Image 1 (cartoon, rainbow, N blue to C red):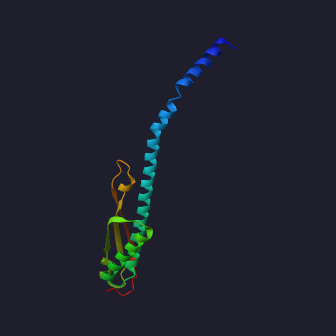
Image 2: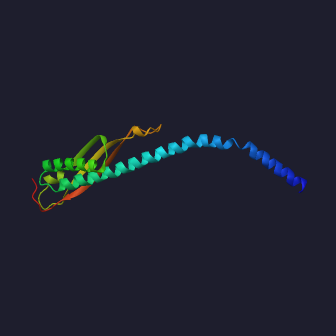
Image 3: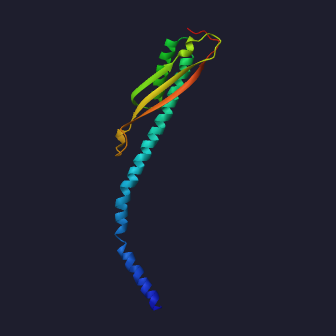
Length: 154
């Protein structure tokens, strides 16, 4: 074996000996970063799931309200439908509101009319325990459903 090759191999072995402690240092540094990324993915998943549930609740509320014959009954039906939908999805809102625009019930028969439901839900995120993550996020969804044009309105 040539002297230059032996020298290169010796230097390579020396470098490998010096790198042995770096693997544990890299692991000690990367483990918390990976754990934080995992918690962030959980948080984003929960927010995405809650957004879908709030959207579904708004759709259900608008649809339930559009099937009623008067504005008061429509508001009550929308409230009940939104609550049932959120419970069915397993979403717990620390605060929620259901706003129903029933102005379409004041229009004359034969005129196109709609009812609009807006749902706001504040989802809790503080139990995830990721520093810098807000304690809660308010999600809002709006859905509009047509009222039957030739059905009696009160």
